[in-house]
Every structure is written in structure tokens, then in C-alpha cells.
Image (tube, rainbow, N blue to C red; front, top):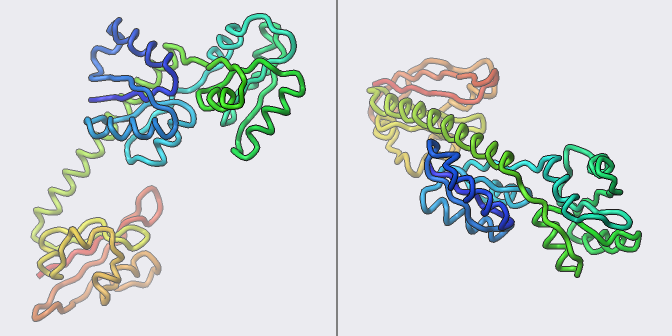
Length: 294
């Protein structure tokens, strides 16, 4: 198993390397930490996938961006209340209010965390890029000159000339993400093994088998079905069943309770017994199998 941690801030890399030096995760497999924030994080994740990464770990907006752009499991390092408290303590004694700036909403109230250590805190969310500067300047005009935030927020603040403290991730938060990644890869590999076993059984069948999803797209087309319908599975997979086999009524399994389940159909100069079976997944009709028998 190979886990790559794409770190928006250097502190995460330092923490991960320290944990690895202590052999905290000796039994999990290969773990590496590389730098990357937002777009550069996606690039780092792409290189990690090329090197054989099974799962990516990252934080905040970088984790979300990687998940949107790559077809690989992504686990997010969660920012905890303790991480916020550590950053607030790092700014020391300040006059006025401390701005906690994030590009996404948190599940806890930072104002209450500040009150625990005697600091006045205001949450600022940069949800719209067009309003970033306006929100920051507005906060400054209200007397806020000290800021803490996640990697993306700190970068934005510094672009506008403000000093800001980056919120670091604790060993505990990183450890939880690594364990979650390990479990996720384990579950995924088991599902892949089941899928491969099913594919092997279907391909070894002497019957022709075609499966479509709820959208009517072909997901499975075994070698016998290729010969029967004179279709290449490489080009057929992902296509709509009606575009590949116009006269087939397999789509009716999804759209009506009154469908022709069994029958005789001719393809070329041969007759085949056809059986159409709707299969329910998680209580809904999501996949259909059509078995063609010579």
C-alpha cells in the first residue's frame, strides 16, 4: 500500500516525517509527504498516482480540488478545535480581535474557542473569490490586524499584504487521516477483488452476458456476447444500449414493470433464447443483466 500526503503547508511535511522517524506507521506500508497547495497540489497528486499511490491525503481546499480532478480515493486531514487553539496561542497577546480566516465553514465556533484563552475572535469565510479583498479590508477597517487561517486563506491574506499564522495539523489529526486512508484502501481492494472475481466468472460463462446501469449504459459485455452481437467490448463499454443494439428491449427492464423477460430473437442467421433480468442494488433498480443463450 502506498499513501501520499499532499501538504499545503511545510509544517504537515515536518510532522509526517517526524512520525515516520518514530516508526508510528511501520506496518501500514509506504507513506510519503510532498508539498502542494490547490493547483500545485493537484499536480503533486498526479505525480503520486504515476508513482503508484493508492490513496491521497490532503487538507482543506487542496483535498477538495484533488478529489474533483482525480479518480483516486482522497482523505482529508480534519482541522480540529485544538489546532485552532494552538494557532490562537501562537499569535500571543494581541490588542483587539483576531480574525480566523477559512475558505470553508467549520463545524465548531471559533469565537467560543477564543473566549477560552481570553481572546476576541471573529470568523471570516472567503467563499467568493470576487469578495476576498473586500472582506479582508472590511475586517481590517473594523480593527482586525492579526489573522490565522488555513493554507489557502493565509496565501490570500499575504497576497493582500497582511501577516497571518497558518493553522498547523497535529500528529493526532494526521494519524487519524492515515488510519482512515489505510481502511479505505483495504475496503477498496476487497471490492476490486470481488469485481474481478465476478468479471472472471462472467467472462468464463458459455452464455452471452450484457449488463447496463440505470442510465442504460453498458457496463459488462463478455466474450460470448461480443461474438453473438459482433460487438467489440472496448468500444461498447460506456455506450447506451440502444446505440449498440437498437432492437434490444433491455432498457425496458428499467422503465416498466411490463417487459419481455424471456423470448427468442434472431441475430444474423441464428436464433437465441433471451432472458432479461432487472437486478436491484441498495433497494433500487440500478443494473440489468441480459443473458443470450444459443
